[in-house]
Amino acid sequence: MATVDLVGQASSHTTAKASGFSAMTSEEFSKIIFAELGRQDPLAPSDTNTLIQQVSGIRSIQSNLDLTERLQTLVSQNEFAGAATLLGRQATGLTSQGVRVSGVVRSVSQSRDGAVLNLANGFTLLVSSVERVETAPTPEEEPAP
Image 1 (cartoon, rainbow, N blue to C red):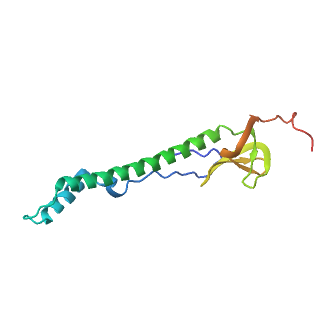
Image 2 (tube, rainbow, N blue to C red; image 1 turned 60 degrees about the vertical axis):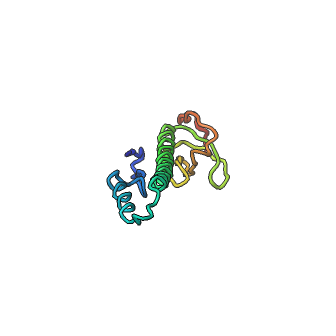
Image 3 (tube, rainbow, N blue to C red; image 1 turned 180 degrees about the horizontal axis):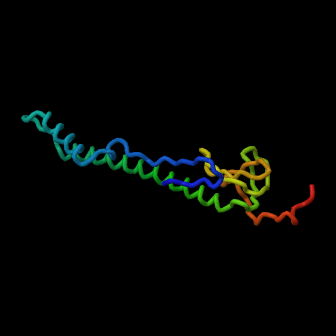
């Protein structure tokens, strides 16, 4: 899913790529099973049901891992989209250094820790550390320096 960065910076999200058994097609899976059956001793055949159950279990685990990765990507994209709705609003919260700051949200960016609000006063806030959001004061309402 492509996203548009509202401040003109490049923003990219990679989609989860299938790996392991979940990346296999049915044809590839069948080839593995037939190869395994072709290598067994005809006088002491292995239990094919056990083999199929084991491979199926591995595929199920891989599918769960892939689903978890995709859900994490979706949550990240949703958080970023929500942060974009705060553009032009007054946000208050704690910086990563624990300093309480307040300022007008000028842009939104993405970091490994999540969506980041870039304030007009130069501070940044993780969306997860925002405590309050208000309508930004108009120039007449802003206190004099």
